[in-house]
Each structure stands twice: as structure tokens, then as C-alpha cells.
Image (cartoon, rainbow, N blue to C red; front, side):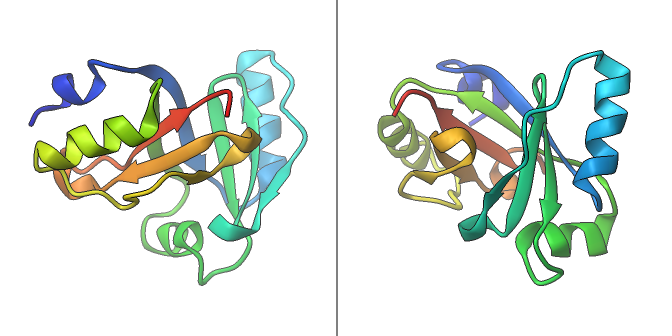
Length: 137
């Protein structure tokens, strides 16, 4: 399985950047893009506080023992994942698993803005954490 076939059914939805401070990260990306950031949203189940500035999702961990908190401890601030929009997330997960990709999530869950999301493990995608996003659910 290569990245091209992974993205064949979806278009780029957003890129996510892990930050220590959502307020500082939002100010920086607002300055860079000239766009206003969305109001912060807390996703307790994922242990993050998020805000979008255009197509950039900023992720601030709610604690050091969360996925994003551990990411920041290991790697520091920076690119966390890329997300592709899909029409049918459950079907896409089944297709990718059948193709041999390792999934972080076998079932969709609620993500930012109430969308359904699931992640594909970076060991299957060239070292990049990939999120699949289904809008409008």
C-alpha cells in the first residue's frame, strides 16, 4: 500500500500542529495567514484543546500524560498529523485494513467540530500519523 492509494478517495482536510500553548500558536498562525482562529474546543476523550486557523488544527495537550503531551515531550512542537476527508469513514477503514494498513482506530469516534475521525498508524504510512475525517455526521 502506498500513500497515493491511501489518499485516492479523499482530499486534504487539514494539518495538525502540536503546541505547548494554544493561545500562542493561534496568534502565530493568525499572523502568518491573516485568518482568525476558531474558538478553542476541548476534546476530553482525546486529551486536547483545539483551535483551527484555516486548514491548520492546533493541538494543546490537557496534560503531560496524553497522546499530544507525550508527543511534545519526545519531539517538541511541530507537525502532529495530516488529515484526509472521506465520504464513508467505516468503509475506508475496512478498505485500508484489508490492504494491510495498521489502524489506530478500527471504529470512528467523535473529533473536533463533531466530525467522525479515525487514525491510521504511522508505521503503515511512511512515519506520518494520518487522520481520516468524515464531515456532516
